[in-house]
Length: 116
Length: 112
Image (cartoon, each protein chain N blue to C red):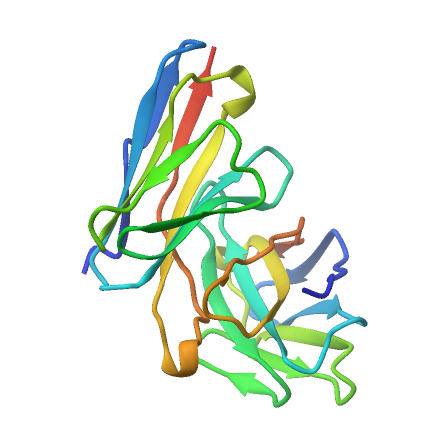
């Protein structure tokens, strides 16, 4: 199993450009998440999904959109990139256990995005 | 979710046990304690979690005090590869909103 993979690994955008980050998992997990991590800070949740076709806002959703058309994929879109969105983006997934439990989250390697 | 407090950094010698403390004095009865770590530039890695009892797996042991207000992650034989930021997280048991809240963590430096 590849686990959680992210595409691309690095990207440089100009202000106002758009892009989509792709997250894929091959573990048949129900839940998927997008986090961002800024220097010296912990991870902050952007959006998450509890199943195919569903998405919900996290702590810092402004400026981002997401879609989960297939269970294994979770896309993060930036419609009009801003320098404040320069960050490392991590995707994660977790399984739905007994009685709705969800403990371990499995993270991808990250996408390093710079907006100039 | 309850807040956690960790010292900013600590170090230990290679081969020795690393004991990483965490305070969570406002933890409620249904909240779990989780530990993740992040090795430089990589995605976070799940280590262990527990509710009341002490837990052990192939990576580490988790000791939770009887009053559940603090816990200690133990890496029994630290190696240089264990140098990382370790996050102690308290999270309620929930299915629909299973997000993790990462703080600043504790930086563990393992010295040769």
